[in-house]
Length: 244
Image 1 (cartoon, rainbow, N blue to C red):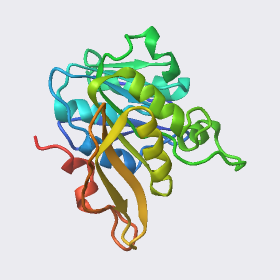
Image 2 (image 1 turned 180 degrees about the vertical axis):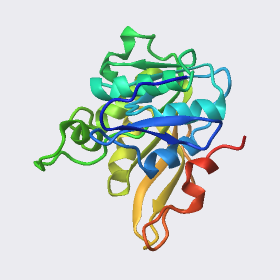
Image 3 (image 1 turned 30 degrees about the vertical axis):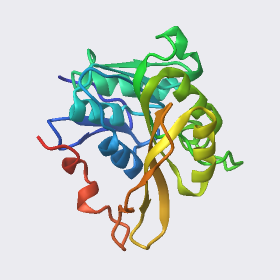
Image 4 (image 1 turned 180 degrees about the horizontal axis):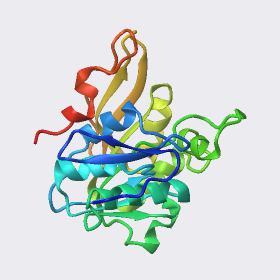
């Protein structure tokens, strides 16, 4: 499919099933967080899923390619990012499988019933709000200006069926806060691991929680994402996400 690139846009090859992603250097560009989460999410072909905060759409696109599930509703509150996500979905001929929704996730009930979703996944803004001046779109993608940790967990629980799964990555230093909010909303953490860079610094917590699940969590080994020089390890390159 041909696509008309706007100023500051470029096409990057995801090296996976001929998928490509359009990124705009003036907007938020995905990082290794997205790589890790997309590789971790597991679904069934019959599942209906929701992504909270899709950004450029890269995670939903890769999750769909990996799992071939029934439907993904990819929510994005920022219009500029929503338009880019929709452009990427159309560019990869996935419009029948992924619906990009430009709306606040708190309004999800306008789009489907409560307690009706099989899987929810999110790489949300997990930094506390700061006074640092930056591009407003990037700020809302990084800092919890529009979505707090508590709101994230409330919405995930409200959408999920009993037994439904929630996949999330979050700043490691806020892992206790995340788990407390999950527990408060009937989401039991069942698996979790941390990522660390090549210098031994822990960066992210990545987890799967189950609505109505029993107590008991499997803690997986840490995932090292970078070499000591800061370069991503080969295993974190998009071409290694999915076995064709």
